[in-house]
Image (cartoon, rainbow, N blue to C red; front, top):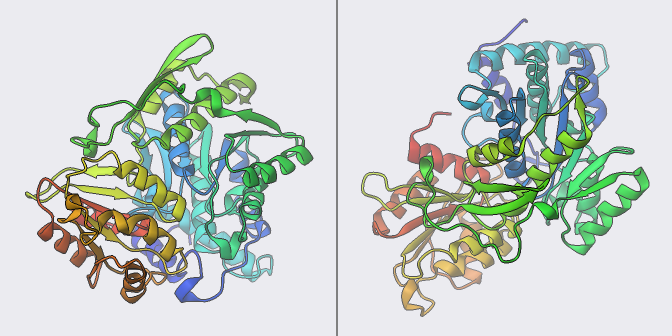
Length: 481
């Protein structure tokens, strides 16, 4: 068939089941780059028709990708951005620079391109060139690459979905590879130690290629370094794009969009780049975002200094870097949604592993100590539930004896996902910590409970999963899937 309607496309993807077949849904699916390469070959090798930057890591890769793509757009490059997972709509994963920023692939285009990809996949299976129909992620990756090629994208910024070595995005030949901070996550796929996980993520490097990164845990550094030396990779340290020790996070409220009124400060500081002062003003809150912004800026500088597209240099001025950083949009990351209907504001964060939970904890320390807080928490069954609970739940413990916390609450609820932890599992984690918690049957009920018990001068903090943030964001803002 030549195309599908958007509704048919969503039905086709839904029929494939969860992207990661683990937890409640059985054993992990085996990954193979040969499958996505065969599919892309049948589609005319779209991944070879644009320059790309490939970004792997445990935490921060989406923020880095969004910032770099915004810089590309500000520089006048036709820029594509591919990320995962999505918060509300699958179209969020595939974006191209347009008059209103990085714009999602339109519904009709998504359906049309999936029809093309579907037909190619079916023919490959019929001829025995694919052992089975592609996975959800492989299909959406093929959609993104095909659309980028059709639309004349000059620079595609690609976020790795899982790991790196065998991820479908690794089918490109990136001009620059980027590795963000690495932590323990997806152990059923990537290994149980930082060294093993870092080794998988190091698989995005290429022979004689370029890697932009920052120093991190010694085990991760060692694994990345070993691969880089073996492949003759030139390393670019993004540390020079970090603020100096004497510079502090900017103060004041976030001024753009849904961040209005947030007590969490923007990241504002100066850098010296090429003998010029570069003013960084990022709407992404939290000191941890300085590392992600640094990686994006260092990559932009690397592209303009040492790489060509269509035989011409990348023209990315410092002014474009400033403009792109300031215009970055990446919701669900310490996102402050102002009071709605007289209720307390909502702070959303996609922290889904212990490292992310610690980052959120550091941000919560910026809130006024006397501010009443309600936590809505849930996560996937295959995540480190006890570890995340141990980091976050005690901060909202009304029975701790801390007078500032007596008006706090913890509400636990399952997510609409087959991999979701049950209420019983979540309550068990709270019980181990002797933290008082209430159960809700679903996230809509949890939000209603939180709005009922949290005073207007308080805050509702919702975290534990990308899926939780997507569902609550839809409820709070009325966004349609």
